[in-house]
Image 1: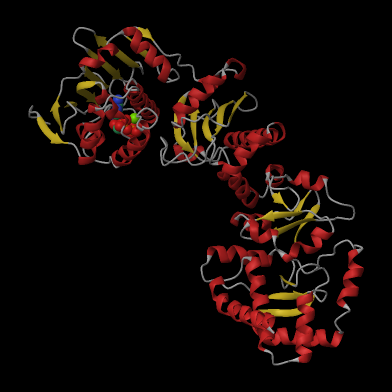
Image 2: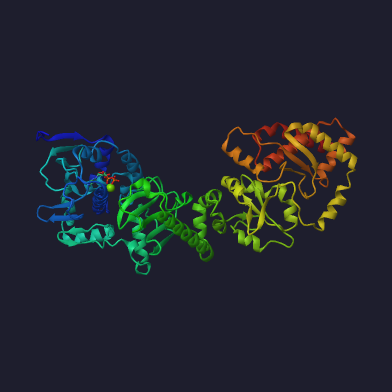
Length: 624
Ligand code: ADP
Ligand code: MG
């Protein structure tokens, strides 16, 4: 190629200009993090180089040490960060440092405006490189790609709206970034300052970082150490470097095994699920290493999918280095590792639940839905997950309890675990279905999360106790002393007039119900809707209603309480004044009340005119 050696001037994209303007004119106290960002880029470039070397024969300088070198000149007030990484071609310089693909800049600026600090956030938007302009008067990036035929180029900018590109003399592979320091940033042109900053922010970078001729970082991959040698702080630092989440993780697991498969893994459970849109990593998955070489950035096979909230890395000597990324998936080694990690995660969470219930609540609040997803999807491993579940119940007084807690306080003769499905806590706590359970002291799980309806399909049993929906029409509940009193009360309405009322209900409600019948269990409530058949099918209806906007719920059975004054009065009214409009209004309203309590009412506002008529009738009645 016959390269004309001219300097070409180009403009930054508008967002980048704005970003540069702010970075170079504000005084951020954390500006030392520019070094962390440059080192992190160098380390990425070295990782990618390492990976190329596994598969690619045609490489410039194949034998050069993979390292980062920091040099400085106190008098000239410059520092230089050089790496022997993958390098950049001219096009890559333009694309990565100039014009394209920096949609992150806008998002970053917004966040910066809110947070007023750079350090936590800059790396998360793919704009870390520009942090250098907090300390730089001018930056020169000389780079030569690893491709043997690529030429070297130099990119320069003073952080205003433009940058220049020119061909350069650079014999060796990689990138060298020369920073001319601003007057007020000359402190960085000193060995101690550089060493300290490297130690603080980049200690675990897995390539040597030389400051002049001295290695300044510890470099040992922390996961290769024995867990007893690693301090808590080191895990936290590592987590931060991995995720850029500046909140400490809720817990970490350090897993080391050498037989039958070598595993060195550190897994983290974050404290929060939503860490803003800010994540350094724009996908989920574990970092997969083999012999300290990063072979996959987002491995999704090492943990079941529902554990995607977990961050971390896995390193195994037993994963062949030269495998293609796609074929990493299904080896026996991988299976083994997956099993080991999965069971360690579950065991650790179980222990957390037992030993630190408060921390466990934090976990459950943030990540409980993933566990529920697991119960629904991990058929083979479901039973392991059940101890992790937590529920509010009719007896938990706002706290969350486990299935084990529930089973431990089951009453005599109780042979099932009962649950009620609903949309909100308020609707389930006032549900008529709970009547017979309250009077018998039977605890009921409140399932009010949309995911619960899914989950309960797969959760048919816990420790050989079946789970049963309280609206199951075939429940057999222990007898109580109150049953007799109820029967006496019910007998106050004659069978014949009760039958008339039932017929009236059927006529009014017609195809909206499958049947109307006397309830055997209701005590304080006038009525309830039960499923036309038992089993999980009708619970699916709830799921479908959630997913499909205009899905109509299949009709149910209306049970009415013959011992309840409202039902009794209606029965009398039918006998005395068959044509009184209050009868049909009340039937309609009672039915809709039940829909509402079930969370099945399509449009509660529709009830208002009818309620109004009923109120008018009640007011008129009280006048006379
Ligand atoms: P990020 O690292 O999040 O992608 P940066 O702004 O830090 O964002 O860097 C932008 C891009 O510039 C990198 O993705 C990479 O492609 C390129 N780059 C930066 N520094 C180097 C380097 N030392 N060697 C090779 N490429 C680099
Ligand atoms: Mg970066």
